[in-house]
Image 1 (tube, rainbow, N blue to C red):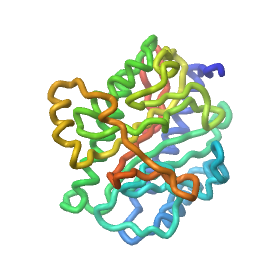
Image 2: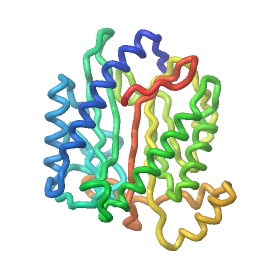
Image 3: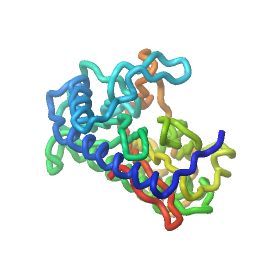
Image 4: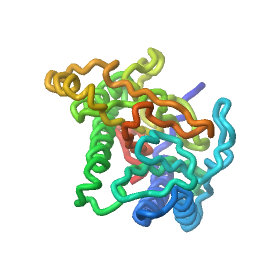
Length: 286
């Protein structure tokens, strides 16, 4: 499948829509409180998207054999790594919550699809109860920054995955593979597929990045379980972490969507839209 390449004017138009979309997501995140159910969080996100005139596109979305997604956003809590279906689960202080949504927004050069995710700690950041969440969120942002810094025209995707893998090892977290970034523009999912897995496919690895590409980068990081801590410390010290020691195991719930860590470790997920320009990466959701 051909990879769409956007003109500088199109990229600027996407950036304007992306800024509005990101501000809506941030306003929604600021309103989430202990005692909210994840279904109520979904309502908060829906209201903020409506405020900017965006049309949500996750409700009814299907992939593979999954049933149609029933909500506006994925709202994942603690051990729920990605794609959690909102419902009656109630948030408590110290919980780690990821909100992940997508929408369409009319720009001056047509309608663009937008997609982003961010993780937040529930409750005041200075409270000891939130330390576990804030530490993991910081690690996710560190991995994201390392991946973005590696983006350059002519660079192979293998270089980006290596940067993300070493950042994850230094931060003491595991990368979740197979839930990948992707091209985005007129459709939610366009070519290429951009997996940050510690063991990506050779086809993904060989991809060469080109100016005009618009895509998402979305590391999902999972905290280490106790039995692995000493090994990870040793690996981080030498900066030669084995990819297999960074792999996290997950399972999909009967709802066909909610992905949960099998060892109940917590996960954080940061997703941003990026345009690759001749001078380097341009963040479109910020």
